[in-house]
Amino acid sequence: MAIVLEYAGKTDTGRVRKNNEDQFLIADLTKQLHVAQSSLNSTMLGDWTASSTGHLLVVADGMGGIAGGEIASGLAVETISWYVARTMPWFYRYQDGREKELEAELVHAVKTCQQTVADAAAGSSFNRMGTTLTMAYLLWPRLYVVHAGDSRCYLHRERKFVRMTKDHTIAQKALDEGILTPEQAKSSALGNTLWNCIGGGTEGVSPDVYHATLRHGDELLLCTDGLTRKLADAAICDILDRSATPQIACDALVAAANQAGGEDNITAIVARLLPIAQNDATPPDGVAFLPRV
Image 1 (tube, rainbow, N blue to C red):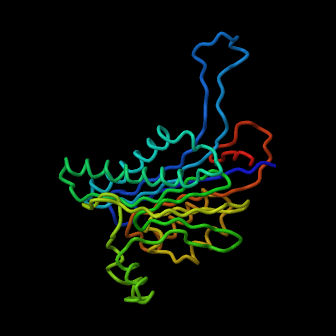
Image 2: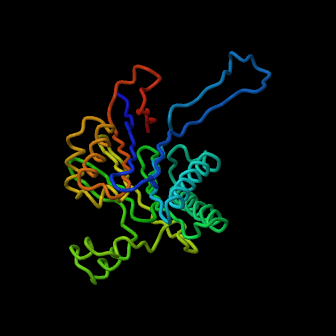
Image 3: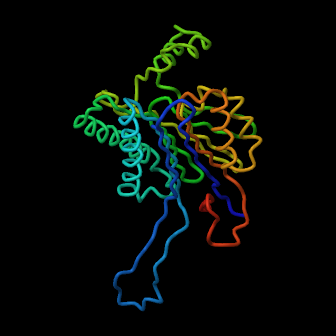
């Protein structure tokens, strides 16, 4: 039996907004070799592409005006994908002793997004456009989450549903300092005010980094606050428990958030680590084989 990552993503405008400022990305990271010239017989070498060695999951929630937020979140996701593909190929496999170096690279990727969005804002009428960014970088069996804003990453393991990230809102900071109770923080308008994000007129971003060792059967959820402001964690966990596939889970989560009002854009990525018989070298859509360790 091989271990695979089965995944799906969905984004929805919601029932109130006229446009969608959310963006998401699911990417398989692979290595490939293309022989241009060689003294050896080409049949002895041949082109090859390795199976997926890593995976990148990203959600971003833009802000700063109808077009500005959409531009900011799009630039952030585009920059992350470019950075990982162009500058981090040596990290496509988990390597003992290089974890801190990998974390530093992921943080630098987010800070590169900050510069990209700030530069774009400076040359436009959307000078305060910005975006949240929550990124999961999976190199089996390790998971790295880099986060700025109030989108979230959850780990669902053996019926325990744990939020890995902390919201970077003024309300959350007041809660941490004991100024607000959990009930007050949940209903406070300060929950809409970010103190840490990409762009938004800020001079810099301070991403948090989290990591975990994954197990067979684990499930990840990355989502924007259009989901978590309408559904409690228990309700989200219940939907995940009842959903046969990640795609069914994404559809059900978006539908439930819309049924609860859908005042904001809604985005969710669900990824599950499952055992599967590796009888075919080509996995079905939405499934990627993980390398053995």
